[in-house]
Length: 204
Length: 256
Ligand SMILES: [Zn+2]
Ligand SMILES: [Zn+2]
Image (cartoon, protein in one colour):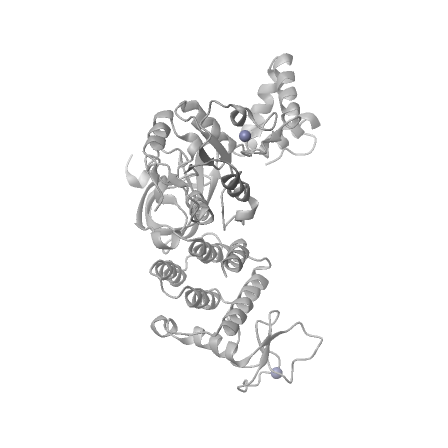
């Protein structure tokens, strides 16, 4: 659906093309955003450009929990006030944000960066599962909360992790069924998440 | 507006694939006995408060209500008939179901109806869930699927000379889609060895009804050989290895 050659200035066509590559944005939305920016004040456009440019600079993956952070260990891992014996395992950094927003969780995290998916060809070794298991053997962790999405991929990942934890003396729990199958954790409202955390139950 | 004006239709179907779409929607690929393979948008399906999300999980068989749309039809209601919880509970089960669904997705063009293939897929998911022998279930499925979509390998005569095959070891040609007898098997051709037991198993799977086929016992060598040959042949026909086939292979290697 790209514009015919020459119909738009190259800079406009280029931004439309780049925006269209983002998830959830089709050519129509990309065009709308581009023309919005064209009319927006210079400061706003520059601030956006600067934010995009700075995004990948100086960002690291936390060596402990694999969360995206400005330094490693990340702010959550450095916070000694947090419960050091509980780890909440999530698929994506955005899930950390969603759970932090509830203010109801005071433990640590582990970010997998995805979920096992046969259809997408994502295997256990493509995720930060080995790092999680290594943590369990190194840190005084007594409970692992599996907070992967209530989807086929999330459930499969949880099943796999349970198997990897094996008979280590660790309590393994799964978020309560307040989250219906198929939904995405990052879209859950705070009350639903709090109830899911509080109602978590032991696996097996 | 009445149902006719809105162009609403109902169908049974299996969820073959789904991916994130737009802000919080999902684009779902359904395989329906009456409407064939179709893609439809499920608005808001990623939001936990959308109750139909759970009915749109992969491998689920259910009833769906759809409304005609401009680009994609919209799924307005979904109701699960079979969720197959047992096959979901282990990695290999998930991998096998994924392969079964991916093969249909890859072989069937959008809009094509294929009731016998729908039946085969639904039964295969049921069998995997019911704990039927999984290896035989998958081999049976692949052989029957190839036949239903018009790629059954020729197992009775040599694909090069047309002579009936003697009960002996032969070779298999992916390019020709069948067995090559030993007198035709010259070194220049790209051939795979096909020992007699493997040929017998393939023929048996092509002909036997499931109640008989399920009793098939395979020695490990023949099982590996037939499994590999079918995977390679399928990948050859599709011109790319299915993602789930690679997944299943790696998971199985890990487990054994
Ligand atoms: Zn950290
Ligand atoms: Zn011949």
